[in-house]
Amino acid sequence: ARTQEDIAGDGTTSAAVLAGTLLEKAQELMEQGVHPTSILNGYRLASEKAMSYLDEYKIDIDSSDVEILKNISNTSITGKASESYSETISTIAVNAVLKVLENGEVNIDDDILIVQDKGQKITDSELVEGVVLTKKALHPNMPKKIQNPKIALIDTPLEVEKTGTESKIQIKSADQMEAFVKEEDKGFKKMVDAIVKSGANAVFCSKGIDDNAVHYLQKNGIYATRRVKESEMKSLARATGAKLVRSLYEIDETDIGSAGLLEQVGESDDAKTFIKECSNAKTVTIVLRGGTEHVTENIERVFDDALHVIASAVEDHEVVPGGGASEISTANILRSFAPSVGGREQLAITAFADSLEIIPRTLAENAGLDGTDMLIKLRSGSGKDKYVGLDVYEGKVVNMVEKGVLDPVRVKKQAIKSASEATAMVLRVDDVLRADKKDMMNVKPEHNIHNYDASGMM
Image 1 (cartoon, rainbow, N blue to C red):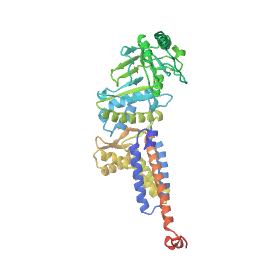
Image 2 (image 1 turned 60 degrees about the vertical axis):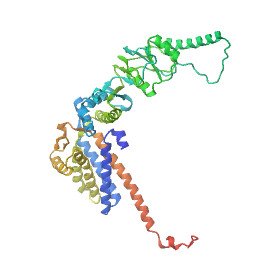
Image 3 (image 1 turned 90 degrees about the vertical axis):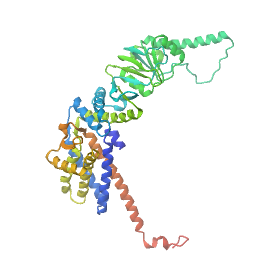
Image 4 (image 1 turned 90 degrees about the horizontal axis):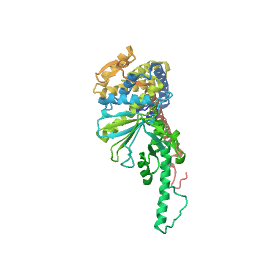
């Protein structure tokens, strides 16, 4: 399941269910006297044939067609108790993927951030072309809203530099104390002056910012926040075009990024700062809203699946019909293929075909339909139209392409591959264990333990 998630982003349940069914069928074959090696060979041939057929069966799409991509997203949402929000989820997910598409590839983990914002409706969720941080200004008098902010990303502390060795300063008078404080204060002012000179009016620092530096930043009308995560600093850089500055006194206008708007929303610890309306942003943020933490966490998982299937379709430009259509059609092909193989491997190939049908059967049963009846209808319909699948809402067998129910071919192929590999691994281990047990049972009489005396000698 983890491999399926990493490669395809969805289809983990299908892969797990298919693997379980393949193992059940393998057990039945072994009980009929079919050797595990023959089952393994048959399953391998079936998997290869299924992959080959899906390459022929797939449909090429225009990866910039928003409606097709939304249909793909809607298919992934079905059955996850979020169907009533599919329009909101799919619209945001499709726009997010297309915004960060670069050279035909989508990096979801780095370029699409999801921030939960509890207390509102799911339909109030939004896509921000930029970054949203759970941070607030360090001083109440700092600006909370800046049009066209100039953004500095500081990757060094705005604090008194600590030396590597311990040292002590003896202050013997109030004048010395005052001079020391003034000198320290001068250092903070020099830091802030460098930022002001660069033209920045918004500072995001990955390290600490001393309160004295905060004072001067506030005095110069600069928004600032500290201890921003490294990953968030990189996202800010990709969204705003700013460069990470590691030597404060070398900062200049070429290091500064930009956005259309910086706005802090809220004043509590969960206040958020929006850096949005970034032109040519390479990173976007989905602000996920919901009434409770449980709701937002569940919707975030749905969003994650939707984003990955859309990304797969955009990168590969290929889909197959959903609703169990691809599994039924592939199963029919495997049944036709099995007799050409001969031997006991053909029994395993047929078992593989039967196992694939667990997907449409499960779809039917989860929709409250009779699994067997729907399977019979699907087999019959698929013989006439290879794109026929199950419409779970109407309980009918229809053309899934015309219905707009589509899945990325990557998800289907990876599910078969993951299930086949997991099954093969279990069968190989089982075969070894059976062989070891057989060897233990075939002990020569003279080596039997009751032929030894207490001293261990014959």
